[in-house]
Length: 79
Image (tube, rainbow, N blue to C red):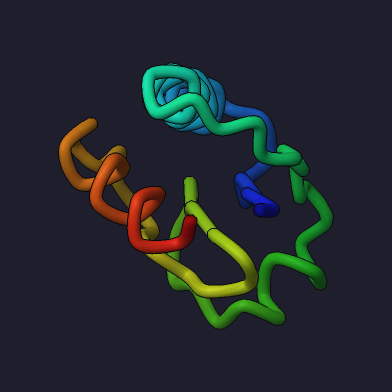
C-alpha cells in the first residue's frame, strides 16, 4: 500500500500524515508514505486544495483533515 500526502509541508499536512500513520499502525499496516510537495505533481491529482490524502493512487480527501474513522475505513478497504 502506498499513501501519499499532498501538500507543501504545512502543519495541516503534517497532522494528516500523523493521523494516517496512527490509524495504519492501529490496523497493523506498514504502508509506504510519500510526501508530494511539488506543485506540478500535486496538480496532476486534480485536487483543489491541500492537504490531500491519496491511497494507492486514489484521492480520498483534500482540503481538510478527515476523521480517524474515515481514514480507518479507507485503509481497511485498500488492504
